[in-house]
Image (cartoon, rainbow, N blue to C red; front, side, top):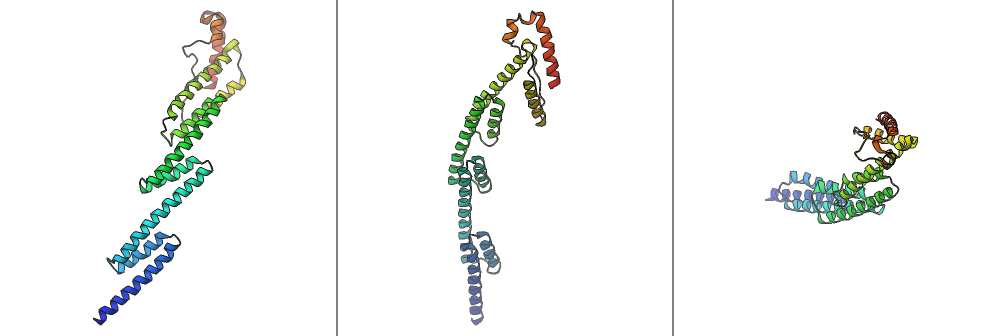
Length: 239
């Protein structure tokens, strides 16, 4: 009985020592180390209910702290207008720890604000007739969001860009005059395509005919053939 009493006393002293040491970490918010200390204690005092209960409490506190820190970090980014970064912080949390109501609410809120800013930026670029830049802004946003507002805008700017391209080309072909600034613009566009692994295809005739060509007598007019050959030369050089 005396031996059992001494053993029991030793166990209690060891438990209290480890609990106290773990609490010093927990107070500073370092729940990982607090849990590690108690798990070491469990290797000696197996199946100790007090230690197990305290570990569960620290695990819960650690999860709460991590969520609070995550939400705070996301809010910090959002306050700076960095909504995509806020979304990434929250999405990483969801991927690692599963869905959480508070995190999901924040993620949806910042996603909506992110898409709002994307659409504002794309609209501003489109007003300046920078349709390719507007399209790229939308496509970049689509990598991280499936917001239903993005796809219609993508289609809109693709069509506007195509129309703009045809307008520029028709302008170059008109009267056989070629704007070197426009030619340089398309050199850059094609270089960008190739740099991103896209093989460009230069369309010399898009089934519709330019207004200036029809006004000059259409394709049967002799002068149009020379202008078409000039355009072919430019198109070949660009590609």
